[in-house]
Length: 307
Image (cartoon, rainbow, N blue to C red):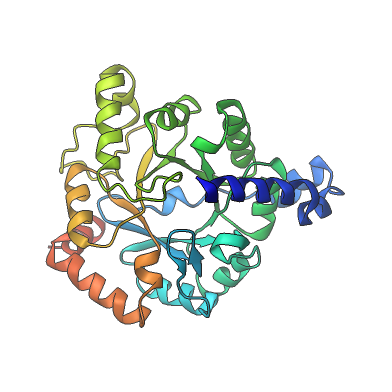
């Protein structure tokens, strides 16, 4: 809780007095006409296969320094080599607790053409404009840190600029807000931001709540809560295009397989890769494990029609 209060205070101070003030000279028309792009993040999450959103971060509040000397461009280029299961790259730009910088987005782009998710604590319209100017394809909005009206306002602004949005939830109330604003990409975070503890079953609890509270009249229209393996669409996606992403505490392929069988096939992974002494070898072993669980074969069959 101490960490969260501090980081919110620092971020709000940064927004009010920091580098974002340099964007004030941009008129609304200039912003809209010079920044707009076509959304590509969600489109790159493939049907019928595992999609890993591979994260780049030098540190985290829960682990402290992880890999402070990493080369951002080199890491993103290695991720690009494994695009059979990595569909996008996430990069932290928060400086105090994650040792991130805004310029890291451009450094990621030098190594890959995959879509980029900017992860930061975003509260301001200026941060949304900045994200687009920096070259991000998607931004993170944390439901628990924003009122529903502010969440919707930032969500709609991002969409107007051609940015996809990952709305992160941890509690039933967070999920309600995400559904109320009609979010298309919803990340269920297994890490409790107040205690920093990982709760691996949280994603199952949230989906169970969705099923029991909304039933077929509501949730059934935004996600396939039956979890049938025959559904080749991305995790719990239906005609409305909503995708659920599992976040935090993912360190075993067996856990991915369990969720994949339940209908979730998009996962955000960071620390597991970042702490590897040899990232390329780590990803090779990870790929082998996916294949051993039948997930690589499932992907090839879905994408190329081969057994």
